[in-house]
Structure formats: structure tokens, C-alpha cells
Image 1 (cartoon, rainbow, N blue to C red):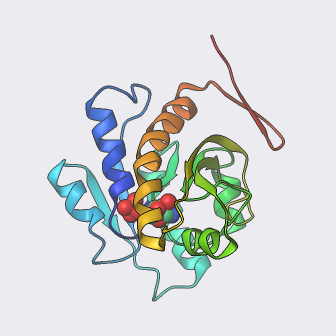
Image 2 (tube, rainbow, N blue to C red):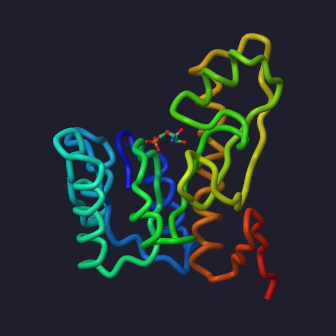
Length: 196
Ligand code: GRF
């Protein structure tokens, strides 16, 4: 699921084409905005897509439409790849421990929609990105993988976003492969990766 540019979605496509996500099939893209560039990427790679607009629906209506489609398509795992909307508890329960999100900060620092701005404002020297399972809170689910970057004295919101994005594109496909391989063991907040 995506809301805009879709570069993380593209990173999944590229990794899949390189054979790096052997346990996942990228079946379908769902966007909540008609003009999301992610749609062009799905078209180019002949991946099915559906636009389910969110601006004209309640949160519940939107999530129910998405869940209906996911059921029809037999979708097992959902990736929030730049999907900028909170899901209802019903959605989270239906896909418990099967929703993956990528967030541009080292969680639990700077959750929410303005992670880069918040990190710069706070004056941190290190930030990064986090691939995590989605629970009912905001960017609060168990962490699968993180990567850090160092901030320069001249860092801007844009330069930090660019710096971090590169690593988002690396860890999101890796986290998806781990999740789909069944090697992830969730114990409360803690995730262990089985080595067999
Ligand atoms: C990424 O930084 C993602 O972490 C955040 O929104 C951005 C989406 O970028 N949630 P893209 O649409 O994947 O290019």
C-alpha cells in the first residue's frame, strides 16, 4: 500500500527482480490517492493495482474496502510502503503480525508524519530508518530491522530525507523477505530471527 511517490514500492519490485525476495510475490498495489506516482510503477511492471480513495470515506469504510479486496486477492502480507494513513484496530487484528511498515527515523524516536523535521528540530546527531510490524499504535510495533545515518551540521529536512531513503530501500525488501520466509518470531515487543 502506498500514498505517493512509491520509491519504496519500487525498491521492492527491484529487489524481487534481483531474486532477493524469493518467498514473496508482489501481487497487488493499493493506493489511497488517485495521483499517486506509485501507480505508474505498478503499470510499468505489470502489477495489478487498485485506487481506493480515502478522502471521501470514513476510516472504517476505507479499511473495510481494503480488507474486502485483500480477501478477494488472498493476500497474506501487507506492506505499508509510504502509506500515510492510520489503520483501524480491526484491520490490524485481521493481519496481526503480517503488516510491515517502513519509517524514516530510529523508532521509538520521532514517530508520526514529520520524522525528519522532528529529528532536525530536536538536534539529534544520528537518525535512520526502521522496518517494523504494525500494531495498534503509531509507528510503535515490534522492530525487525534498523539502519542509522549521521546528521551533518548543515542537514536540512530534504537532505536528511534523501540520506535515509537510500537505506529504507535496502531494509524494506530484507524485512519483507524475513517476514515471508516465516523466520520471524514475535515475542511481545521482541523479534528474533530464526537462523535455520
Ligand atoms: C518514506 O520516507 C517512508 O518512510 C515515509 O514516507 C516516504 C515515502 O516515500 N513513510 P516513497 O513513497 O516510498 O517514495
